[in-house]
Amino acid sequence: MQLVDGLYCTKVEHKCKRSWYDKSNKKTVCEEFEPTVRCIGKEVPKRFCIDRYAYPNQKGERPEVMNRFHQAQLKCAALGKRLCTESEWTMACEGPERLPFPYGFVRDTNKCHGDVPWDSPDMKKVAKRDPDELARLWKGVRSGSQPECVSGYGVADLPGNVDEVVASETNDGTWRSKYDSVHTGGPWYKGVRNQCRPKIYTHDEGFYYYFLGFRCCAEPDGKPTDPRTPRQIREGWTLERVERLAGFTLEQMRRKLEEKAAGKSKGNPQAIPGKTMAGRRLGPNGKALKGERRTRGPE
Image 1 (cartoon, rainbow, N blue to C red):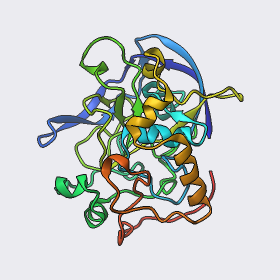
Image 2 (tube, rainbow, N blue to C red):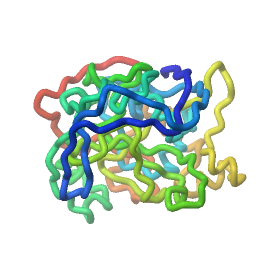
Image 3 (cartoon, one colour):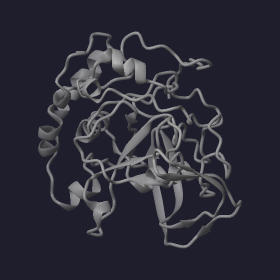
């Protein structure tokens, strides 16, 4: 894990210098920002640990996707970690200089994978976790294969490639605080929010998708890590409630990880969507993208 220690700014001013409008997503994409950053919010001290890569946090592997929010939460908990919060993810991406992209002020999808054309997913097949459809749709790259997609805090692959789910910290009574689940980073497609700060607040905790991954965070300095989200802690949730929503227990997930480590777990491609424990790294017969580099090594 990477240690992130510094001041998080609750509201940063980035002035867009050059942009274009994507009609299909109804979104303005900024290609270049002015090379200046100003904190116009509050500076909040933060110190935490974050996985260098998206789960399973292994260089050379593909990020795991197709997990519901509470399933991802238990997978982090089984490792003694928790889901990252939205501000932790943002801070790790922006680096100490609070950049709009981890590599600077000019958008570059050759550094952080993006701008892939839309490929019209068959939603019925996605919902059923059809392996052939998931393999067809996969356009991501392997963790750690983008040497320039690394933030000033040493965290890799944050914007672009897979979108990532994080825990909400918004508690203002607006539509942004409706769900505990927040999406950040943007996937590999063209015309989306492949920046550090923009977020999506409109998907509930039951949502799962073929480009949606996650990564884990933890408390630093040997402090115990509570696997519950800030909202769950505030509302007095028990871990048993999370387990019921995930469809499996923390102990079952720990055993599954032990089986995987021992090479005994084969998964179940036909698992019921609400009860899957395996997630997906890629459907069967999936092939690497042209130019995708495969490098292995523990992180």
